[in-house]
Structure formats: structure tokens, C-alpha cells
Image 1 (cartoon, rainbow, N blue to C red):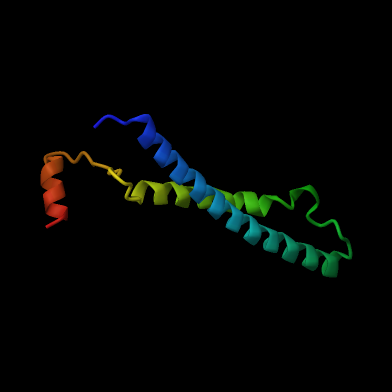
Image 2: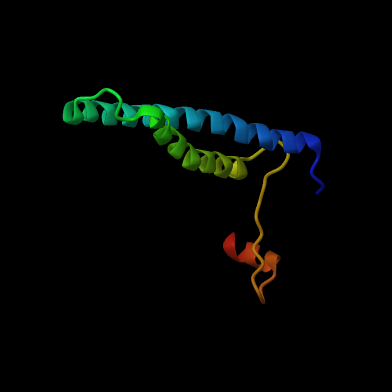
Length: 104
């Protein structure tokens, strides 16, 4: 099957909306982590600028696994007229035999 622009756009949009949602949630969790570090810093070091320019780092770090989850979800999704599948190349076993063996 040849990949059309419509199918590529569907997969891209699937990755995009999942990335936006998951990274938004990761940003909220990162903000809570930064706030906790700042509160601890205020209590321990008596300063308000513990995180400084690095206050966005926890959210950005959490956004990496969130994007991986988004891509994984888009690859596992069932689209209207197609789905994405991976075929492994095992030596000595054809892909069809492996498919039949795994789905028996």
C-alpha cells in the first residue's frame, strides 16, 4: 500500500494532538515540581530565586516521555481505513508464519 498525503496527515494530526495533551499535562506536573522545589528553597535557603532560569526544566524533561507516549499511541491507533503495523524480520521464519503463530 502506498502512503497518501491524507494518510500521512491523519497520522501527523494524531501525533500532534496527543503530544499537545500529554505535554500540557507534563507541564502541569513540572510546574508542581518546580513550585515544590521553590517552596523548599524558601524554607531552607531563605531565598525566592532557587530555580531561577531553570524553572521550566522539569516540564521540559517530562515532555520527552510524554512525546514518546504520543507517538506510541498514534502508532497503535486504528484509523478509518488503515492501521500501522510493524513486521519483524526473523531469520528462518517468514513474516506470514510469525503472524499466524502470534494470532493463533
